[in-house]
Image (cartoon, rainbow, N blue to C red; front, side, top):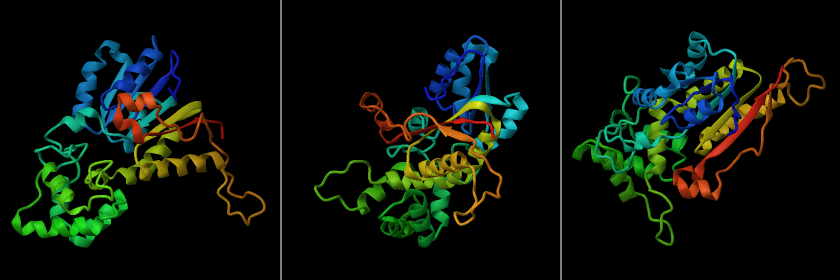
Length: 300
């Protein structure tokens, strides 16, 4: 584990999800270490409350988006900490929840929100945006090469009935996206569309830089930051953030002497990025796109 937890440490799982990482952390920092687990998804917090009950008061759980990590850590006594983990992927529980629309095959509402009490469902977003607005979302957050074709089909569908379920949208995208040369698809044609909408409704790329900056301020010297990203947009943000913190100085190259006064605050740990092994992908195919970036806080 990139965090390398040891007994007595304070650690934060900023996206606790199904609780798999949390269990391993609490086993490793036993008997007196503690963990703060955050998740925007109330269902995830409820599940983890049951799964982590055996660890007693060593596990503290809060429903919160990780953009609020600084405030929650301060309120619960987790400052400074020895390690922070961000796992930015979807959990199996979310994909299996018919009422959320994360799965292409779901007949439930096209919602895609992590926190059902915040923001607008994806179905409402698609119903309100014009064609150019949909194109912008699909290109910006999904890097979808067929954004124009998909957006036009969505708008043309409106007189015949709105897109309400995940399977409605997946079927529509499957009809209009051309089959690749050779006739075989490596993944579902709606993958990028669903990614784009999920990122948009949850403001994922907007809040990630804020969360990373807050995490830096929470780490004690020697503390570790580990981030698992599953698509290039998130990984790019993490890569640039860590590179800037390793570099420190922000002065332009033409300035001969540093005047900004910023010192490096991170050093890389292990291969950057780290990739899943063949065995990990075989046991969990969704891990194939995972990229791990880990770094250690140094005194600045």
